[in-house]
Length: 86
Image (cartoon, rainbow, N blue to C red; front, side):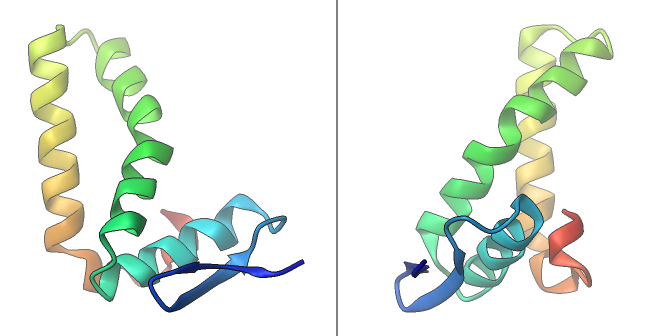
């Protein structure tokens, strides 16, 4: 199994578990890899959307919440101590 790469950053092998893959994406995002950020958004947006909607938010408010979550994540990306727990 070969590692997946995001612009020179070696990530976990494609068959590894989700936590390892997410940790690799966080590390690549810390290094400025836009593809890794996009992959994190793709990975977690459905869950965030479901949580916001389950909390009773309408579509517009849920969109605002997701935008805020992603902005805060990017702002505090270097402070995440356990990337695999994201």
